[in-house]
Length: 478
Image 1 (tube, rainbow, N blue to C red):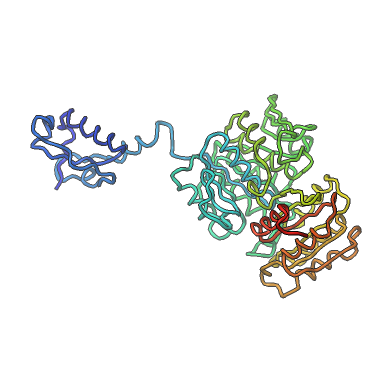
Image 2 (image 1 turned 180 degrees about the horizontal axis):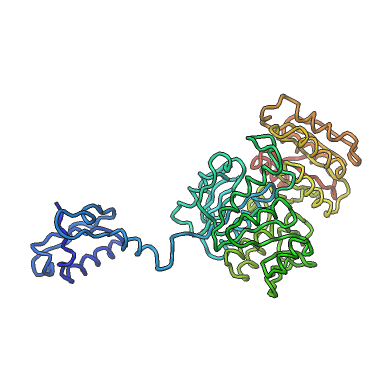
């Protein structure tokens, strides 16, 4: 049985219990006392404390055999959270067809620069406070819940990819900021009942629909499917675009709302008459503003940081410190010098990504341009063909290889589709089929001369980057 004696405890007995808890270092605990009477100090009756319990039972307080019930849960929660706090951490959700992993990593970097112990999930793994706690494609709701449940998490940036959204929805009930980088022509069309670009947009829109009422949706104004999502946001909207004169941008800014755009050699954040400028030369990710899709990723990250309330000095410092190498953003336009030639490793795998990569590489000088490419077997025939249609107008040499996993395709079927895309290519003069990703990389690098450029569209990201690193270090001779 249990008897409630809260109103009868001598102040000195209560003081000794508090001292015991502080000595052990516990904020909430149960203290067991042996004494003749709770009405007198322990010292007067040779009483003492026999146990400090880190996991005390609550039933005896909620429903004692005798005495007044005490709702001990309320003061426990009040002790954990200060008045006005709700226990939530800043949470940014990121989705889109392309750019979402780089944007996720950049936002997480900005949060870390602010001093937050940041949890991040993406297609490479789960990271908490800079430490990887899981690997593989962790862009689904289970990984999100694991990241949010980690005791060190002060803030979270969660990549939300198509597969996880379809299987289990979101790993959270609402977010402070939702970022949609783009929809474009879509990706993974024909899979899991997602057949059209409109279907993709409806799926990606889910994170916007779950923005907190006092939060922001950060949306690409230049993508009509993304811009239309603004009507679904319970919170406010921050639009971003390269063109500040885009009608969506101009209208939103005229209404005194937040926008992020490029003006000359600066990224500008504006709200009503207020402006903040960041020079593109101070954002290494963009290579001085020459890589258009990285400028868009930077604008999306700036919008997310702004919507979360980060100071502008922190945003500037974080952008300046983010280097787009194989450590910070593996497989996301990683540029390296190998024997005087420029080699770029990227995980792009859809027509929109090919267009962005062609535009980016054309801004980089080169004598001869080559590309190493395979195709994901679970994409539609036309999506596989279109990739080499685009590349055939921009590269002199195209080396085709077969992915490690064909994803339901017959042997050689993907390469045949890629070859079809090169029929009538306006620039490509050399096409070569190679078995195996690493042999294809070796063959391409062996053909390079100083001043050439080679784009390697990698499949096995970690292994391919390590293979390229060994080439760069001279451990493998072309």
